[in-house]
Image (tube, rainbow, N blue to C red; front, side, top):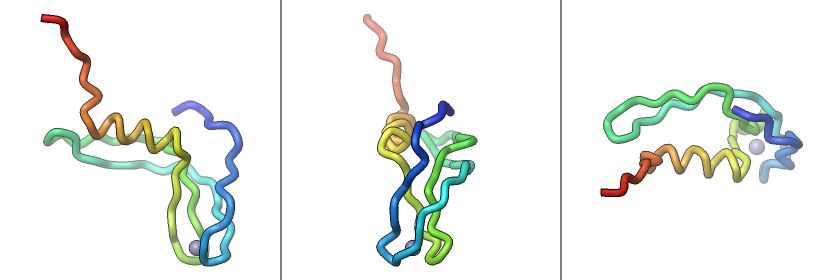
Length: 73
Ligand SMILES: [Zn+2]
C-alpha cells in the first residue's frame, strides 16, 4: 500500500498513545479470502485497541463491496 503521510493516530480513549505498525488484514469477499499486506494501523499498547486511517478504511470497505468493475452491456 502507498504511504499514508503522517502516521499520527492520536490518543486512545484509555490514555495510551497509538503506535503505527503495518499489519496483514484478512477478509472474505464474496466467498474468497483476500489478504491485504502492509496495511497501516494504529495500535494502542495499553489496551490493544486498533484504529485505521480514514483512507485506509475506505480502501478496505471498497474491497469488501467487491469493488466491481461495471461493464456496459
Ligand atoms: Zn488504549
